[in-house]
Amino acid sequence: MLIKPVKIPNIGKYKNVDVIEIHVHPEDDIKKDDSLITVETDKASMDIPSPYAGKVIDIKLTVGDQVSEGDLILNIMIKQDYDDQTLLYNNKKFHASPAVRRLVRIFSLDLSKIIPSGKNGRITQEDCEKKIKEYIQIIQNTPLYKNEHEASLNKKTIIQPLSKINKLSGKNILFNWINIPHVTLYDHADITYLEKFRENKQKEAKRLNIKLTPLSFLIKTLSIVLREFPIFNSSLSKDNSNIIIKKYINIGFAVDSPKGLVVPVIKNINEKGIFEIASEIMILIKKAHNNKLQSNDIEDGTFTISSLGNLGTSGFTPIIHKEEAAILGISKKEIKPVWNGEKFIPKCILPLSLSTDHRIIDGAIAAKFLTRYSYLLQEFNNIILY
Ligand code: CAO
Image 1 (cartoon, rainbow, N blue to C red):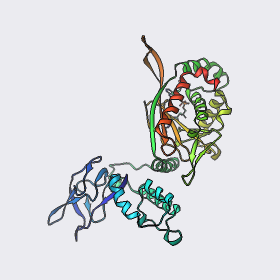
Image 2 (image 1 turned 135 degrees about the vertical axis):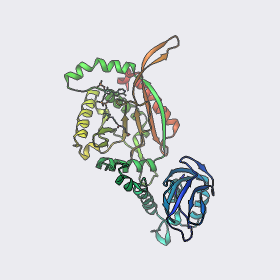
Image 3 (image 1 turned 90 degrees about the horizontal axis):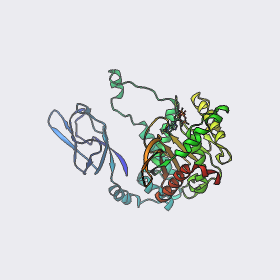
């Protein structure tokens, strides 16, 4: 799929004409030449047709706006097959290696728009990456609303600057969302025993000054499954031609800090016990809340866990971090009736969601990973065996 802007075409000598009707809505599937809007000049009204078939993403105009040639009407998601036909035709004319052509296919790039820097006009991987970065920049710099500053002056809206962390994490999140093909699987785990065990250890934790939440148990169990499924503890090489499997297990955990989302990392989990992990979690959360995280605290993660369980939610799609292959989302545990073959019994159920990079991990292995994780959480008393 490719997102394309649709702009006001050449409308002759007219400028600043009124938009009097909008015929489409976000999410509409439209055909090429369907009417998008009607504009009115002092002489006549005219319909502006869609140059593409596809799905409307968002509409950038409202009735009453004045528009001229080149103004943005809406963004449209073009159907892959339509896109492929036009791009394939264009792209055949240019020199590029199979690896570069693969990248071009993944991102639906138009080679005619890329300036070649290779020998004899060859388009290199770096040329493609430069173009992708340009597109990301354009998306980031496109204002949400055409008249956003005017609206603010009229006190209809409030403009609130993003924090430094929001800006930085937003940039990374956008990059990861665009560049990594995500697949998310949902499951749940029966953590009744684990929660009883945790409850029994609270006295000891208190004595050690440790806050013992489910997170350290979830991280410890995760490290065992990562050892069993090393592909989940990997990343793609820069040229996308190799999988780099890491022998160390460093798990990052998302923290909702007052300045925005940060992800400190606990290193070498396999060498640590649950109290030690819980203690590190406390230290890193404190640093995150006081804006004191050092680069060493947030570097070298191999897998991330994002827990919204303390806040609620029954499921969500976590976004994979750059240089990782998957991410685990945790939602709110709940006591639910579970049928044991004879009667319903109350069980503590924890919802899980796992997003994987489909280039590295397909749905089948993701399902095995998640099922195994759920099993180990349920049979937490056996964890010492692995
Ligand atoms: N279900 C229900 N309750 C849960 C839970 C779950 N899955 N996980 C934790 N809780 C409970 C804890 O047990 C604790 O209860 P008590 O105080 O009674 O013991 C309470 O929620 C608060 O826990 P906490 O927040 O102090 O600690 P934590 O280890 O559960 O979580 C952290 C730490 C950093 C993950 C969390 O504070 C946080 O910031 N979460 C948000 C992460 C986030 O924003 N992710 C989204 C990324 S995508 O935008």
